Image 1 (cartoon, helix red, strand yellow):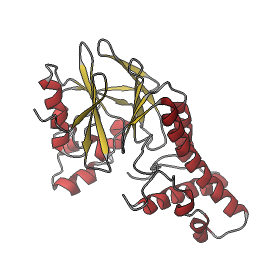
Image 2 (cartoon, rainbow, N blue to C red; image 1 turned 120 degrees about the vertical axis):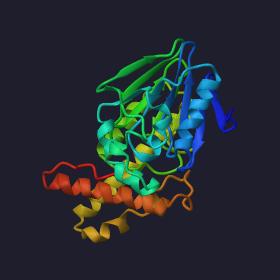
Image 3 (tube, rainbow, N blue to C red; image 1 turned 45 degrees about the horizontal axis):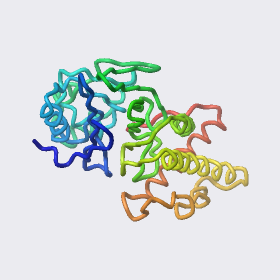
Image 4 (cartoon, rainbow, N blue to C red; image 1 turned 90 degrees about the vertical axis):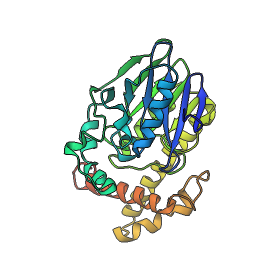
Amino acid sequence: MDDVSFSEVADGIYTCDHAVVEGKNVVIFGQRAAAAVDTGIEPADGKRLVRLIEGRGFEARRLVLTHGHADHVFGSGAFRGADVYTGVLCADVMREQIPRWKERYGTDPADCRQGWAWPSVTFTDRMFIDLGDVTLDLFPVPGHSRDSICVYVPERRLLVGGDTVVRAIVPAVFHDGRQLVGSLQRIAGLDVEVLVPGHGEVLGGRRSIQSWIMRLVEYLSTVRERIRKAVAAGMAEADIPEAVPADELLPAELDRAKYGMERRHRMVVDKLMAEETAARNGRGGGEPAC
């Protein structure tokens, strides 16, 4: 059984790395059933999760997707036929990934239904999945994407953060920066002792987790405030990024030499600039193609 790459981060809860920016997939075992959360970007990633579940004597019948971006769903084919739990908007976001699937694998299966496990059980406000002695509490956290959800396991005081809470990189804002800040603030109020981020190392300890989440809030809020001040001072839009320097604003915990961090910071700046421009012009900020 290929479980050497799994780490037990809480009783009966395992993480497995995938290749995209220290990505994390998760398997959660209860007394009665097991569930996987996210599947990575390669079909082999999902197969690895299925092998772990079946190797422990359970059926791979439950999959939760935190959102529909490529590095969380491309590996889901091993779960075809399973119950796939997602937010109500996830299927729409997954459809937006079809051109990336074709580019990556050179095939274009009809609606990608031969390549992925598609949402079959969706929710708007909240959903609970009973695995026996543990419960998965699913709730929406829009901002990174419009369909983002988190998974909270109250019995283990563990949170699977998806790309709403990341550690290896700054937050990516594909949908709405204000919503992302609100989602992070909501998460910071949970009783969490183990954080499994969508990307980066697992973090333990409630105080450390709350501190990191609020660092992300501070980063996003400071970037937006710098943009607003530059606009108020009459700075030309092309010059505004110079007033929001990565060296000054990136969280100190992040390695600036890894994962194109300055480029990622500039993407945040550009997105929040677009949101501020839309707000001044009386328009809403939309979500670009993923």
